[in-house]
Length: 228
Ligand SMILES: C[S@@+](CC[C@H](N)C(=O)[O-])C[C@H]1O[C@@H](n2cnc3c(N)ncnc32)[C@H](O)[C@@H]1O
Image (cartoon, rainbow, N blue to C red; front, side):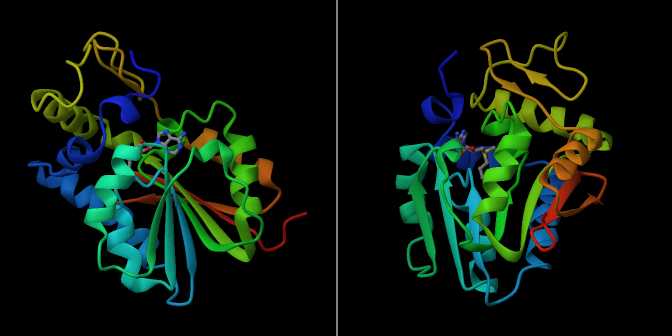
């Protein structure tokens, strides 16, 4: 398996095809996930999206905020995103490894959506969350989302669709279980439980809340205000 499956194989036009789904329930899930964040952002917000791909979510949110910066590890995504986001002046998509973020009190909101903690392989998510909180201004909020456990069958159907399109390897149906998708070519997508997200929230010393959205996503929202 390549070091980073997304960088080496699932980027740019191929990542776009992942989201060009024919499954209505998946389209609804994606819309509801973005809407949850959009409804909580302000027109004056400076926003950072971590692991932003080619800017799919950035494009949806741009007109609702002051500015939105995406960081993304794949040059292919950043270059495809240049075209995808062209003429949207308040967006900026940068090639950067999420683990190297070094922002201090710069953003009103930081987004790590689409099961982002799994995508970036945050082995110690509490340490990564601390970097995210540092990037927030006082009063800013971090949004982490993952799949709702009730969405497992729909999630598997979506990954099967991706495999049929040749975007990922064939699913290993024996090993695909307990929130973890495993393909025969080595692709692996994990998930975080509510308990995992609660542990991350507690580790920050900030105010935090869990939200279950649409029976498809779970969000951990952390507010920097009142951090110890
Ligand atoms: C499932 S895609 C989601 C893309 C985007 N958030 C969206 O919803 O359209 C996961 C993204 O994480 C990116 N990624 C993986 N590891 C990363 C890292 N260490 N730093 C930054 N981006 C990373 C991948 O290249 C890929 O674009």
